[in-house]
Image (cartoon, rainbow, N blue to C red):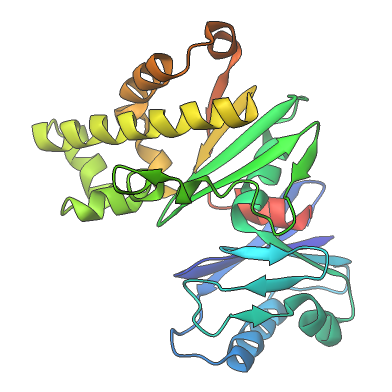
Length: 273
């Protein structure tokens, strides 16, 4: 039995995993913004105690920032102010006396997506479209991380005077005065402004997918995160832009796009670290 944990800015999802299946899960609020490092670790440990069983042999944790995966040290977590340098692996292993692995949350999503989809693609790229933008890369069945889990940090690429994350996440909708689900619901009802907004979002996402293809030559791209629930609204403009920006038709003909917005995918992936 494994325990996977996905730490987000608003919630922390924990799941017991047996045979690549989540058999039990709980969700708790994320850490208070003003919590100290010690308070956050105490809170995380208390949350683990709510679900862990004696059968659990390993804990895997996904966090939304860069990580020294070998040492299990988390650096500069934007949504957790007290997490500047946190040796979370050592701190939790001292409490629970079982191995703990830590990695970027988007890498965990990619691992979970690969497990759910099966098959053996040469290159699978997982993209999380949430409060921010994350990218994880699986090559020949193995997670690519780089020295500090930075392989997939495409969200920081300069784009239109800002960074591409601003245009390919919930931030795009918020900056236009909408919430992501609100824009999707309005598009369902035929609101012209919402439909135009979704089409524009798809165009920006198509630009990102072209970058992904140039960088990784993917066989499979998997979209996750809350914004992916609106895929039906932006997929057409996304694919039109991708086809216009990426010149290698053979690669596009072979490319598969999958959508997995299930919030348990990163939990599954974390358990597989």
